[in-house]
Length: 70
Image (cartoon, rainbow, N blue to C red):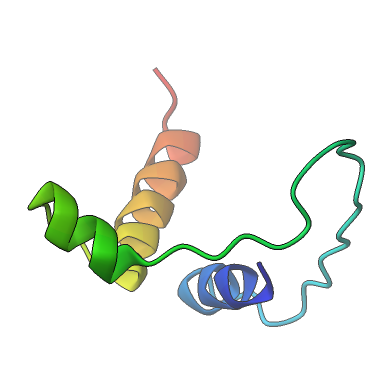
């Protein structure tokens, strides 16, 4: 989770943010281990974007949207 926050902060040029993580879910699995590689092989599917590219494009979209909302 922290890695994703760091990526967003870097893309948005906001290194001064301090995220607060709050565990409010009950009955959730505490530790999940997934293999993206195994899923890609089993489903014969590859993501069209790298995480960094997806975050960058999403951030750009939001910045443009909030500059001039419809």
